[in-house]
Length: 213
Image (cartoon, rainbow, N blue to C red; front, top):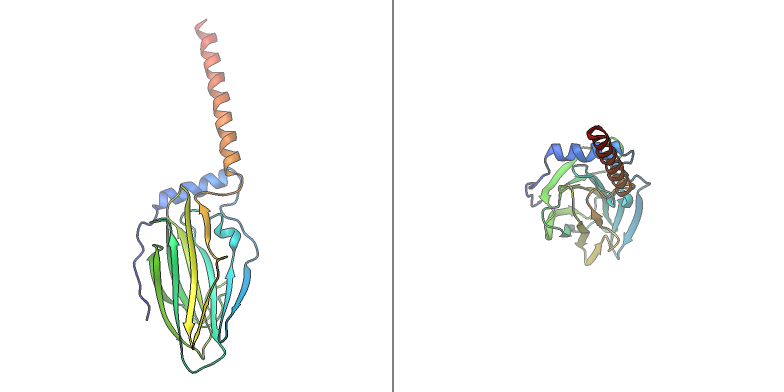
């Protein structure tokens, strides 16, 4: 079935906590929240249903997973569907846990019990997820974690299903834009803090001169 690789380079918990504390102290959200975008990719036989919160993926916080769900089904039941995740990503910046479910995930998780298919760093290449019978519908959750707190990091992911003479993929609109504490208002907040610090230092210097005089 699945080819599983262990997670590597996971960010220390202290750094993750510091990032969240900074975001909270500035009064800005750790990640954007919006209604997930639902996209249907229909082939001759195979069908993908992609559910993704694009805004949350564009504002990831280190250590906080963001999930992308993909439903796979077919109009025929006489074969198998091969599945894989194609990755083009910044080295050691992201990791993922990929699981399958017989039904769509809800707020409480997988109602029928999930099966872990892969735990891996998101390195360039392909993560093979195994096969499913074409007569069944299954859902796959790709939970992505940003492991590095600062820098311009990017991961482009493509979920691909092949079988029964058909080949469908999630499409180029699926991906993780540049990240690294890229939360709304963070740059403005840091600028305000810097200006405030400069004013405080100037006031202390002026006070010292008055005392010396």
